[in-house]
Image 1 (cartoon, rainbow, N blue to C red):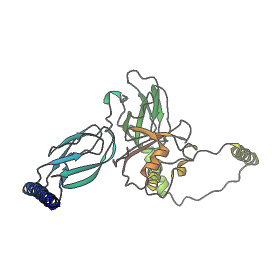
Image 2 (image 1 turned 180 degrees about the vertical axis):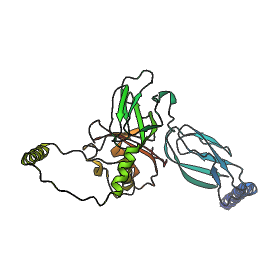
Image 3 (image 1 turned 30 degrees about the vertical axis):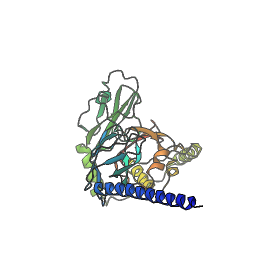
Length: 335
């Protein structure tokens, strides 16, 4: 009977000793962590590279006070970096969430946008032709392509927006004086377009004609009755014109640009361009040197702060139907 109290007393001492050992171990771990702990009120890391582009080296750096350990995650399934100032390359464009854990306690997340690799124009692929800086109004301009290995040509003399010639050697006579842009596309390569300016100077006769129209405002108006044959002829021409298909309306580069801006402001949609594109709103266009479709471009720029630097419209020869468009705009992570 006396052995049971002895065993109970022995177990009580064992439990107490075990509790003391666990307490001492916990206290030691806490004391070690306390001595090693360095507070970090706010993680301060920065992206030091100016251009965030696909395939380019990007430098990150941490400026957090009392930091002695780092864990960088770049949001693209790459390995964790433990450097204070790591370097990283993103292989694809898009948005990535970068996280930095400092001292195993403090963390900061930041979303960065990686733009597509910048398209670099190959100067060796640009068409070559000579163009005088000025000509007199009424003169015929003659140009000839000097590009090696060229098999097709599209000359745009800037007055109509259409392709005015499709041969290596082209001639053109301007209908009005003014400053024009002559463009040449070789082998259908819309990314490499050569553009040169030409100033069509008004002649003295043309200047006098314009001044006469402005100053001679009091010339009496004489109305002549048309002969019956001429009236019948006009009626026949009117009837013939009614049977012709409706022409594609012309839109200038400036008006086209303004409508694009309205799409970015979500005041228009791509269907507003249907009549100018002959009903094909999904035509291929070139944006910042990259081929895409007009419909995709319109959907992409909605709600964006679009800044167009340059826009040129190209039309089929003998028609106002738009063939393609080249657009260069400020980058905002789309193209």
